[in-house]
Image (cartoon, rainbow, N blue to C red):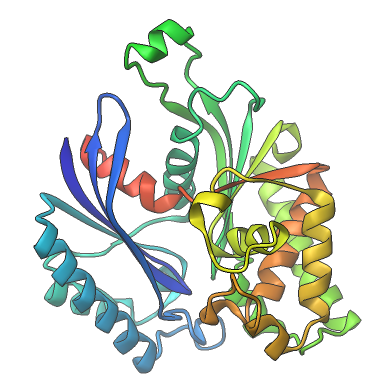
Length: 329
């Protein structure tokens, strides 16, 4: 086992996973997993720069994570930064701040690399499932961007082989990252509470255009199983399941029907800010962006004709941890 610390810093949140990883068997055992909403991407779509207050919120979270990493004795630390820091003119300020606090330089990865890590994190936890058809379409709806990956596993060993400890490594076939994250769309269109038909139509137009781009390189229509990742998807799932508080064990690998996603999305679009804030599974940092995030998920399902989405709590963070243990990044 290798003890690794993986940090995923996105447009809306920064997350930490400290885990013991066995690269040979594909086993990952959580020691600490946490998230802080820092909204690093505040205003980036408009200004092209990371705001000073957003940087300070992010650095405060990094200081908290540094203490956890030191306490748990991680051997390897990887810090991956995604959409907001990729787009910002002053990302060097961000890199220097993280390096000073954590002693590692953020790896500002491409959208394609982000998609690959998300696919790895999501699909390894699906190994051995005989009730899901391949290929998978893994969709990671983030704050600044959404990643699409269609892929399948290298092989399907017999149950005897699996029981003997063999692991199946996922094979990504095609990937694309497009700029339709929940924060970016919310800042761009400022949906009211409730959202107006005109606002909904404008957000949908952006999503449809991005889906056209994704479809140029990713055969999204060929997928047999849709796997949804990240906070917008897990929040929609928690609401659909009727949870009074967030429960990752109930949400992980839940299967939410198209009708449920449509019902939840319609409710969120028609709700006031206070009504959304009062939902038990809703993180306070998602109240103002969940309308756009849910609409991204619903529009994707409509485009590909998906009857359900398999929800995964394992995502890019797990993919970073796996790849760090394997020495791939």
